[in-house]
Length: 394
Image 1 (cartoon, rainbow, N blue to C red):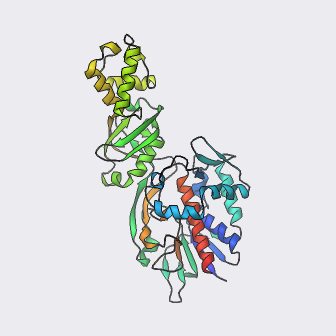
Image 2: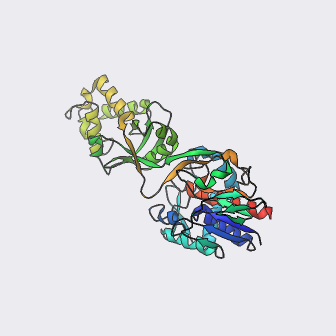
Image 3: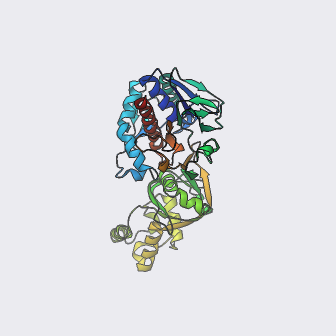
């Protein structure tokens, strides 16, 4: 009986096991998991609700969602798309709902429904919990040894990690992993005093082309929200290289300087005698904060603003800068940029070029995405491709 070892009982590993059990029940499938529970990360993702995929609406290029690995993900999505994901889970008893932000969740809003669904679908696979893998090595017989135990096929789905010691004997190219999807520590008391504020804005890093737009959340430590998390993903390697130091620039209206100038001039012409401080183009606390940064008196009227005052206000609204002093983990979720270099694998099958029978899926590869269900979709799709590749080789 052919045997398959899956290393890692996360989303990619368990979905791969589920596909193998359904499509090739004659296979002996063993899942190795170092932790005490399978699918532990899935159980807490999305705040315990499990944002299992995204509709991809508004994504013009896959690189917007996948800063690294978009070409491999594109092929994987052709094999198993976001629509396939929803059909699969719905067909396995988990109805799903689409939110206005294009994120798909189980209708119950309970991640454990996804966990239970996957565990049921992979029934028949042997899950070895608290069993870390210390080595994967080729055997003289042509098999692969996992902890010195022979298997015909091995699928590595360990997720992101700081290093992969069990792969060292395989002489693979590894892209050094660095954190992605994190919030920004901003040591500015005035900004932090606005904690709880959410604004649609764009955010970037001074001196770079990295930029992201979306809801921006001010916290008691700095900045969070989808815009910050996207920027942290896009700039993950740059920020790691700089020691998470730099200057964050915020465009609070997410408009060009020309558009903001027109907006302010129109506001001034319609309300010349009105106090600028009482004309809230943004939430009042933030508006007052920005007027102070633009060095405008609290009692100044639109008619008194003048060209210099107008230019200072435009500059503050479109390029408000703050020092970045570090990063903070985003809730319980943790994603890394880096992993097994994509040059090691056949992009169509996800099989290792150097070691036949060895496959990789999920975040262990140098593939990662912005927040919004894209990372889980990559796990489902790549796990599916590995299963299909193994079945085709039988």
